[in-house]
Image (cartoon, rainbow, N blue to C red):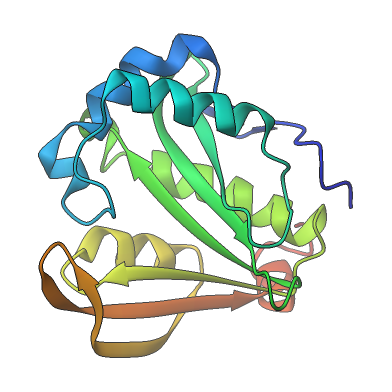
Length: 190
């Protein structure tokens, strides 16, 4: 495992890569969409914040425990930024990681997020030698829960009023998958 590098990933329709300066406009568009932000920890983003975020993500080491890395999701055909995904190796137990994802509204419900996260999960298990990956979803976010289930993640918990979120206590689902489960589901390929 080399923490400092991220090779970029590809899937049939997507590239998962580091952010670059050309992403600012598209990033701002979906980060400032109230419907996209509904279940995210942020509400909106200024251009200055977007540029600072992108600069940080361009150089943040991949796989460094406790440092979450957002990666750009690019549609291969159009070379357009359509969202981002998150990977953070746990600071206390570096053989565990957490995933997250955000997709621009026009690209939702077409399998792009599932495709992108499957690539990131495979990378984490193979290249970072992670043992277990978790994901969390507000229980009202049915689409995120369904995505994690499509990936073969199992719901391990339903935490009641466990997260103070945008002015209210919310319920949260915890999903997880082990490396062995992922390999079995994917015919031995990470």
